[in-house]
Image (cartoon, rainbow, N blue to C red; front, side, top):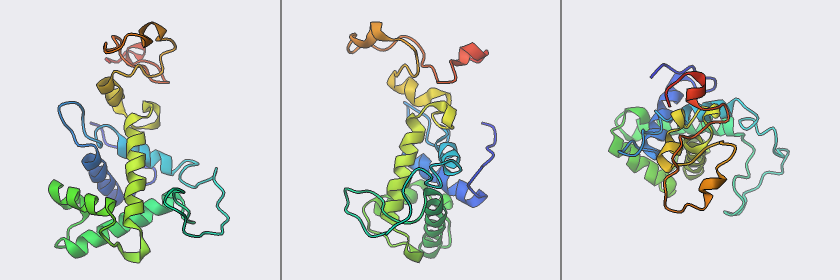
Length: 201
């Protein structure tokens, strides 16, 4: 795989986010892991887009804790939350895991820490909400795994191929009523099919 040029993440942040997405989407006999699927690249691109700066959201406050059904109600943009969250994650890991950063932990230790974050059982420094940060990264990782490849994730349409999803094909009505039958054609991205550009699908 070719090296990635990061738009938002600093080198240590990139190592951490690639490690996280590889644990959230572990490689198995059905698919490559989150890193090779491009989930970290997807997140990186989103954080330098309108999403990263919350340009389409009302961000003038007042900022008060919301209900669990309301989602994030704070002042920090997604870009700020990633910068603060990854710093807090590594700081916690180094303090509690023999000076190791998250990316340097064994996979089983990474999994254990992520589970504690998800359950709200770990307190990060600097007031970072570990559970909320986990939820943010999980949501963005899922987006990156299943979104159209033009956004940086779902490299080679790996998740679509795994699911048998046709992608952005203009017409697959003949197959809609064929239940429990695999779709016979390769998926197509918004940018087209690999074979249209002289690449193998």
